[in-house]
Length: 376
Ligand SMILES: *Cc1c(COP(=O)(O)O)cnc(C)c1O
Image 1 (cartoon, helix red, strand yellow):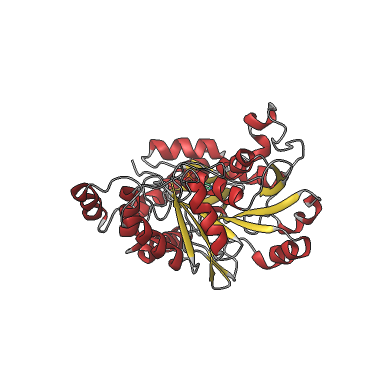
Image 2 (cartoon, helix red, strand yellow; image 1 turned 60 degrees about the vertical axis):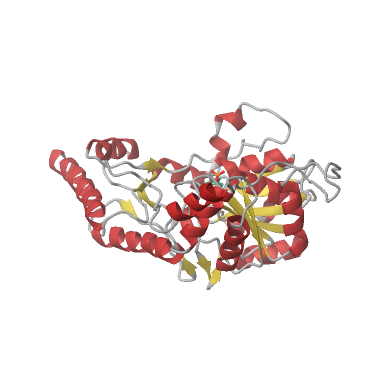
C-alpha cells in the first residue's frame, strides 16, 4: 500500500532525540526548543517563534494573545480543516464562514467585506493544501476596517506569496507539525510573528501564565508547551526543510505531467504570484466518468491510499446540531466549497514518495479510467 502521506525522517532526527534521552532533557525545557524556534521563525522570515504542543493550540493561543474572545467575530474560510474554526470557538469568539474560489481553492477574498461587522476583530486565512491566499486585497480590507490578519499556515511550510514566505504575511501565523505536515515533530505547532509583545504574551500564556513570582498568575494561562524531544525532531527536520518542500513541488510537477492526457481531472491551482508547496497533491474530478468515492475505492484495491477533500464547516454535523451561541451560522449555501468537498481528493504526497511509487499511482488511475472507457 502506498500511504497518502508519511513523515520523512531523513536527517538527524534520531541523533537529536537520543541526545535528549542521554542528557535527561525530555520535557519542555532544553536547548532544542529555542534552537528550533529560532531556526523555524527565521526560515519564515519572521522575528519570533513560539513553539506549541500542536497546530490547534497554536491557533488558540494566537487568538488569545490578540485578546480576541467573547462577543468578537473572526472571519474563517468554510473550506478548511476543522481546527481553524474550532480554535475560534475555543477563544469564545464566533467564526463567520466565507465561501471559497475555484481559482486557488482558498477563501474568496471578494466575499469577505460583506461579512465584516462592528464585532469583527480578525480575518483568519488558510493557505489551503499549500497554495497561498491572495494577500494584497485582503490586507487592504484589514487596513480599512482595522482588523488583524491571522495566517493558519499549517499546510504551507515554505510557500510564498509574491516572493514572501507564508507565515510573514499577516500579524501572526500558526503552523502545525503533525506527522503529515511538510515539516513534522510528530505532534507540534508554532506561532511566528514580528511583533515582540505578541510573542511575549503567547510565551507567557503557553506556560500557565507563570510570572517571575512563581505561583502568582495574572492571566488565564494554558499548558500548550512543546517538549524538547519534539523540538529535537523539528530541528533535524529544519536541516532538510528546503529539500522536503522541494520534493513536494517535484511530486506535483510529475503528477501534472503524467496525468495530463487523462480526461476529467482538474489539477491543483498555481497562480503566477504563488509558490504552491503542494502539501497535498489534490485533484478535482469533473467528467471523469466515475464518482470520487468509487475512484478512491478502486485505487485502494490497487494499493493506493487517497483522502477525500475537507467537508466544509457549514456542513459539519457538530455545528449544524447547535451548541454554544458562538457556533458558526451554518445556514448559508456556500457552493464553491461544497463543490470542492464533493469532487476533490488527494493522491499520495509524501516528500519521500519515490518516483516508482508515483508512477504506480498514475498507472492505477489510468487503468481504472480505461475500464470505464471500455465498458461505455
Ligand atoms: C493540520 C491543520 C491544523 C491543526 O494542526 P494540529 O497540529 O493537528 O492541531 C490546523 N489548520 C489546518 C489548516 C491544518 O491543516
